[in-house]
Length: 300
Image 1 (cartoon, rainbow, N blue to C red):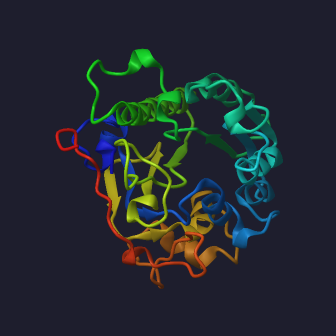
Image 2: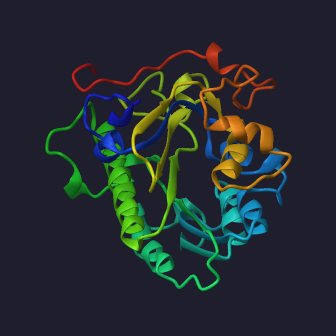
């Protein structure tokens, strides 16, 4: 709800705001933090060897993983394990994500261009995954000081946060341009693993949390070379179904995922109320959570 693509009054995502594609208005992440979210979204039934990379490889995709997060560490392993299974992997950080010098996500553009340009003599379909730091705390570590506006917006922390959204938007724009320049058909999905919410006290900023809808409601947008319009899917869609949706996106008919995948990209409602993983004994229903609306620039 801080992206202009979803209605925020400052233009934090000028490319995503106007691009043709499929926009999920209510994609609900499976968890409120990276590890529990990706464990449920990119693995089938949280089984280590059944995941998006192994599925793509079984379907004869050539797979690439480029990460600006850590290759090792308690907070990195769920994603890093996927990356290391890819045919080619690249990590800017060899250990935990928080033990290295801060590096902009833009550092992934050069290696992405390099692997994109590699000859594809076998004419295989190819899956590229770019794992970004995005707008992870601390927000001012994500952006260069020179890119910040002279006047703070809400607070310094929030100014950096909004600028980090602009940076991700610009990175996606450049990736799409690279794909266009390649002259082949392509499809790109951008989504976030979880959202954030305001702390109960202290500075105007955003932190991890579990109790608000905004901790789970995240951007989810698909941009493809054959898009002719901007289409919105308004039905709430659960991140627990993402593996099925990705299989369908890749054109893979996996029997265990088939039924869920066929309806993922439609306005067909989920058959069950959407649950989220919060670490509680029982998964709460998303609709029962409180709201934490975005802080507007003129209303701190």
